[in-house]
Amino acid sequence: MKKRLILPLIFLFGISSQLFSQTLTSAGNQPVPGISKERLTKINAMLDEAIGSQQIPGLVAMIVKDGKIIYHEAKGLADVESGKKMEKNSIFRIASQTKAITSTAIMMLWEEGKFRLDDPISKYIPEFKNPQVLNTFRYGDTTYSTKASSREITIRHLLTHTSGLGYGVIDGDERMKMIYHKAGVMDLFTTENITIGESVKRLAKLPLHHDPGTKYTYSEGLDVLGYLVEIISGKPFDVFLKERIFDPLGMNDTRFYLNEAQAPRLVTVHTRKDGKWVPFPVTFYDPAYPKTGAKAFFSGGAGLSSTTEDYAKFLQLYLNGGIYNGNRILSPHTITTMMTNQVGDLLGEGGKDYGLAFGLVDEKGVQLGGIGSLGTFDWGGYFNTQYFADPKEKIIGLLFKQTSGAGNGDETGWKFRQLVFALIE
Image (cartoon, rainbow, N blue to C red; front, side, top):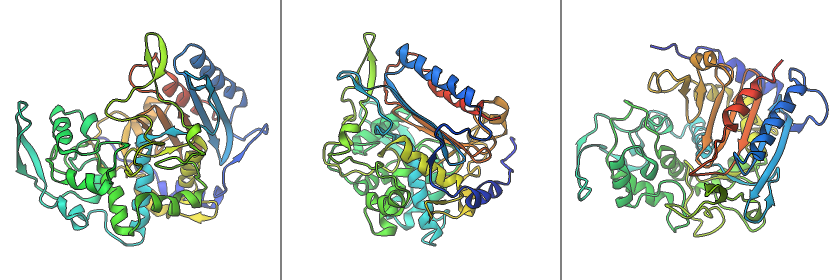
């Protein structure tokens, strides 16, 4: 039985709301207390070498300390075919980094007393009443039998990937892939004309992997919660996020779908073929989804696109204790709940716990080294984006790339994070 996170996180997040509630500013050439300027050059050299050796076609990296941007660089190409250079304001599909934003929206409504975290989701989406667990399955015709679940799915289960729901085309269980595909559930993102409400109602009729609360299974839970935001707020999910989060934080380039001015800044998804970087083809999704098609599906689990600067504002909100640019989005007490382990030992002993849609560095993670202080929160996206934020050191790291499928030995992810924490003096 591993030890639970007992660090007084309310201190970490609460005090920062008083001391670091400013907006992001550039440190320029000024030294930043507690940071080795000389070691920043090592990060820059490592990323240059990765571009030069074709590990990746392009990237944007950002490091923030105490609300000051101490490193922000664009390297390589945003589109190899045309030779278009990467820019600091290039827009990336952030995929599963959407989940933290959806969780924020849910907790804002929770703070308003709209629901309790352990309410059954069927109270708000009746289609989820009396959930069933997969029992037997026939590969020949994809028919299956089920058995009654021992409990209802709660909002907390959906936030923590313990609901038993699957993830369709990226699910680890081939049976679930087939069941979801046959039912027409939208897994991630799409150019098709379908709403999250339509997809979630289809999902609600399908069997679960397991009884809710008994295992951690990465799922479409945050997509269900995007629809819950619509039900509770009475607004389309994209409108709620814009009005309540993106506009107050100045996240003007974070959207499900891009307008004509933004679309040219979208980075191409690349893959490796015949020794070269080429555009990733249309498969079960169209990589052009943020700028083409019906633009009707607002995936709470994977649909947003953003920039490093926009996402840094979102993370700084959390390091500030829930306030940014003079706008109170969440209480520091709520953030403490979100950043506390919610899944017990279900993630095992790998160095990570899981809060309310955030990965958390635990005691084992600190022991392993190079990933941050106790309570550092993080996650990444399907197209090779990543973030981490350390509430103790008040440091943020973002490394955005856009690759899928075959790669070329990209090691920038772990190296960047390890070198960022080596900056601290």
